[in-house]
Length: 193
Image (cartoon, rainbow, N blue to C red; front, side, top):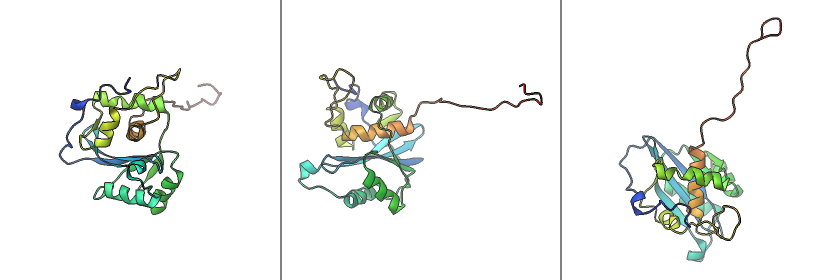
C-alpha cells in the first residue's frame, strides 16, 4: 500500500499569501537519479512547500553537474533569505560546493528512513503542507509504496526523490521534544547533597 495514503487531492493547498517568517530548502541529490529540491516557507506554525526543483536526467537524456544543480538552487531561492539547507547526506560533493560558495548554511540530513516517514506523517496533522504547484511531489505521493517483498517495513526505492527530500526536511524541523539532560547538584562541604 501507499506510504502516505492520506495524501490525496484535498491535502494539497494553494501557496499562502506572504508574509512568511522563515525559508529553508531540502535536497535529495542525484546525478543518474533525479534531484529534488523543495523550497519551504513558514507561516504561523506551519511549514509550506511552496516551490520545487526536480530534474530527472533519464527523462531529459542529459546529466547535470554540481554547478548546474547549484545554479538551479540559487534560482529556487532567488529573493529569499534562506535559514538553512538540509541535504542528502550522500551528496558530499554538492554539500562541499554549497559550503565553498558561502551563500547558504547547509547540513547533512538525518537519513533514518522509518523515523523520517513517521515525522513526515505530520502532513496529516497539517504541521507540514505541500502546495499544488509542487507537481513532482504530488506525483510521487501517489506512487510511493511499501515494499511487500521485504520482511520488514521498507518503502520501494523508486519514485522516492521528492519523498526523500520531504523526509529530510521533516526530520530537520520536527524532531521530537525531550531527549537527555544532565545537571549537577551542589554538594555541601561534607560531600553530601
